[in-house]
Length: 282
Ligand SMILES: [Zn+2]
Ligand SMILES: [Zn+2]
Image 1 (spheres, rainbow, N blue to C red):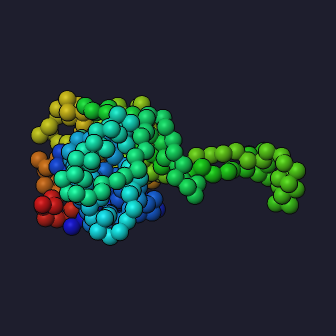
Image 2: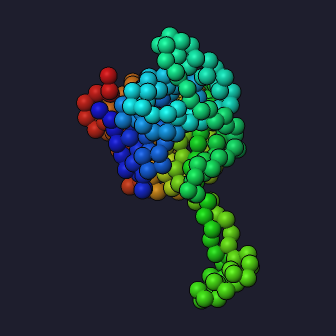
Image 3: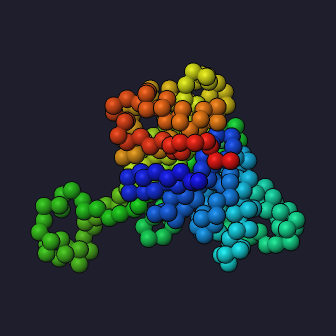
C-alpha cells in the first residue's frame, strides 16, 4: 500500500526505500517524483521529475508509460538532468522495440539554476545535488505580484488610480512552495540554502542510527539523520518530509528511532515517510 502524509497544503503519497524504489506524487501540484516502481494511480499524472538515473529512481519509467497507454493518456513531460536525456530516450526506444509499442515522452532537460514555467503562476527551478551520478533537486514556486512596501498604506482607490496611470506599484516575488531533494550529500543544504525556506521540503534521510555512521552515509553520497539533527535550527519549512530510508531498518524502527531523537524545534513539523506498521512494500 502507498504511504501518504500531509505536509502544509500538500499531500505526499507513494513508496520510498533507499536503493530499492522511490516514486512519490504530489497531487496538488500535478507532479510525480521519480519512477523507481510503477504505481497505477500515478500513471495519469502528466509531469514526471527524475532526480537521477539510478535504478531505484527510474527503472519503472517504461512500465508507467505502459499503464498510461492502457488508459489512453498522451506522452507525459519528463523533466530530467540534461546529462541523462539521451540515454533515457535510448532506453525507452529499446523497450519500445521490445514491446512493439510507442514509448514516447516529451523530455525537458534541466541544468542547475534552470527555471521553467509550468502554467498558472507555478514555476520549477533545478539545483545541483551531490551524488555519484548527474543529479538534480527540484523546487516549485509561485511567482506573485506584491504591492511595494511604500504603497501598502494607500487606500484601494488610490492604488487603482496609480495602477491605471502605469506606475510600477508591484514587485514580483517568488513564494517557495515545495522542494524534492534526494540522493545527495547534506552539502546540498549549503549549496541550495533556499531549500530550507521552502514551505515543504521532501528530503532523503537514508541512514538514521549508528548501524551506519555519518561517514558511511557520505561515502555513499547520502544523508544521515545526524546531519539533519545537527542543522535542526536551520529548517524554516512548514513541513519537513524525510524519506528514502535504508531497508536496514523496519518501518516501525524508522518511526521509533526518529521519534526518540527529534528535537522539540522539529517535532511538530517532521513527517516520517514510512508505513506506520508492517513491512516495506514487497
Ligand atoms: Zn536512491
Ligand atoms: Zn542514487
